[in-house]
Length: 256
Ligand code: SAM
Image (cartoon, rainbow, N blue to C red):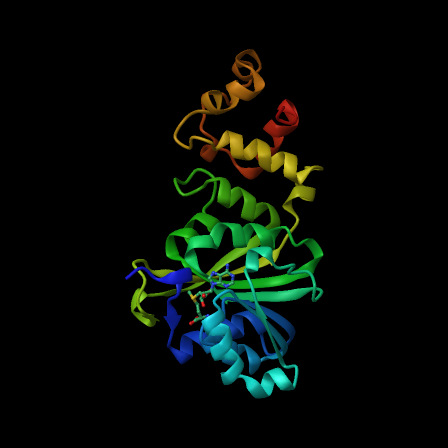
């Protein structure tokens, strides 16, 4: 039976505690949890955070959580939001730690949203597909390095903390997972990229067809003559470091 909303629930208390500890440290003032499900991670977060705001899209689970956490909700230790995280203003509560065992069908848009939070996130700890974790941390030159890696590495320092095998979930997903921690970082300033959105548009064009050369991907946008004149034209975007991509962007300018 297909699962609604990517629902795979974690049952191992020790894994849940390790995720909460990676998110909160000893103690944290405010944590936003994405997709609390039946509240397994929420419990570990509540033990370590002054306040937890949990956003759940499934009304059945929201109802379940309202019953389960009546006391912390009454005491405003827990705020339950029924809604789609992608449509929720995550800056509404001020700078926060973000945590969650993510619904895998929307991992990329969630990451994009967090990375765009600017001053309003202090750390993020997520359970994601192992393959996504590998892409996020992969260095330039490796096959896993792609647009997602560029996007994430521009705005965050990323660590893979520990693997979580599929058997730790009920029902088990088809893939293994890993816990990652993201810490805000402004690589754009270091790389002298003034307009981050324009740079990301350029990078998305450079990676449009990952196995093709920069010439193939960039010529339709910047013109063949300009691209033939750059020394990197016959390389692939995945072979360039973030610094080299930024340098190329500065030479070519914004995509029209
Ligand atoms: N945190 C729980 C756990 O670890 O057992 C559940 C994790 S489960 C992988 C993902 C959760 O995200 C589900 O409860 C699902 O209903 C919820 N979810 C899916 N799409 C969502 C969305 N767009 N906004 C908020 N929550 C969503």
